[in-house]
Length: 259
Image 1 (spheres, helix red, strand yellow):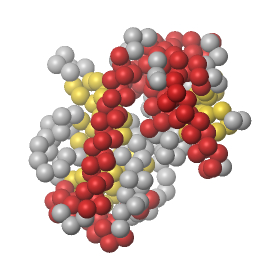
Image 2: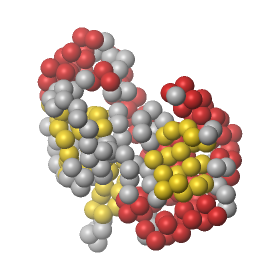
Image 3: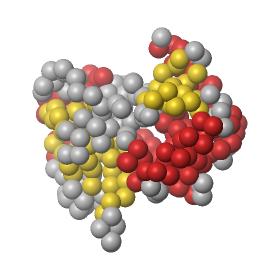
């Protein structure tokens, strides 16, 4: 699983290495780095409590975070994931409507909210970044709605794997190419995946084995999945065939360029 502890220098943000921030002007990056602090989080450690009003804006430098909401009956439901490069927090005012916890070991870049908000007024590039982040959040919400609308667990898993291939393709360590096939390093545990997809861990296990039995995927390890038949995966997910297959072909080219 991704999110293993590394030996990065404590306190060094290096915001220019974060995908969402790398195109900002040097002057803007320097002002952000002057107030940025790096914080490590262990698995299961709370980053933000639900209903809190965080006084900082954060970017995921390494690892995976889970966004979760407590249901009226006390159950925790995962509503999304944050991976390397993703932004979190709330600008200007208002509480968070969900909590954020570390799903793996994580390293986060924290910027005080007042300083970030002040810089927004001086940096149209940063303002544009916030707007694009909002659009990305809407896209991710749409993806999860489509996945959860699939009544079959195999369909939900197939949809989740496609999301990893399309939305998370810029994240190192999650995707790689082996023998011309895409391999996915699962970013969360099966227990977390079951919460995310609204089912039980044993149902997740059965669905993975069903997809392997059909020749759609290969379980290299419990946390490493090889896509054997991309077209079959798209069909099981019920996704738009042209768009999904085109995205997978693009992904293969991207992964080839990294080798």
